[in-house]
Image (cartoon, rainbow, N blue to C red; front, side, top):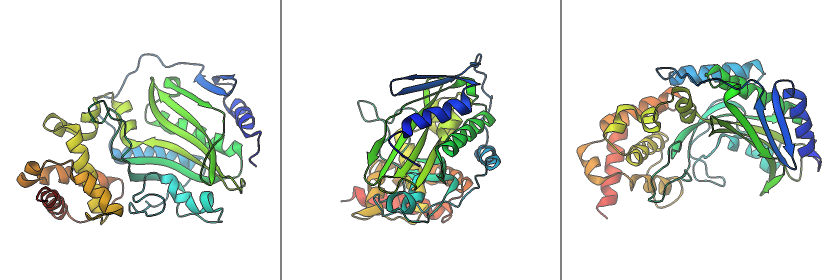
Length: 328
């Protein structure tokens, strides 16, 4: 049960679970923890772990803790956001409405679209950020703070299965409750070698705090980046990064996912979001043809479970959308 003592109860649960293996410090409301056996020099694989294999490894670790996989949510949303921005939205009925059901829960490698990625002073996406990415998450109703801490342990085990070992991690956060609309929560942040890798969030319905849940996860592409040690653009886009800017490739990638999800350009809603993406693709590039890039991105999205039309249909739809915008 959530109460005014929840932050301290969370600190106690973390100390009980991790105290033998981790150095845990609590200064005021600031919690930090590092493994007692820090990792030595980082040795990364010479090649990336295939996407499907990464998902299998993460899923297997959560399964050991009793968390099953769940089907993907639709990218078209319409509740609070036009498109899905996080797997936690699968718990909206439970968390936001205090209803006894959810859309989805479990381990979900959920494709999402966010326009909030960090950008530099001239507007280019910074390393580690994309408009469309796979939000690998454990979104699950929980009955206790202890269960949340158990699932945090599952996530650390999943990272270790990828080669991101506990000795490379720092977990930190303010043990202070936040509130957004009908939901309250506490957030812990996990860094790997000084780079933000994931969040672990304990959430509950503010008016009905027995409706408690967890959201623990990261971006699949960010995990691959940390595993391989490659440059960000090459991790995500391969050799295409040598020929096109990350921002253009990001737009094609996002447009491919949205078009696969039956979203078409329009004046508002999901279609309005797609128009914003199409405006980032140079018309001359669309006129010459996007087939090779779209084919590559479609292959990626299908690997994580997205279905949609064949790549020639997708390419034509995206090209026509870009050119129609340019003629206005």
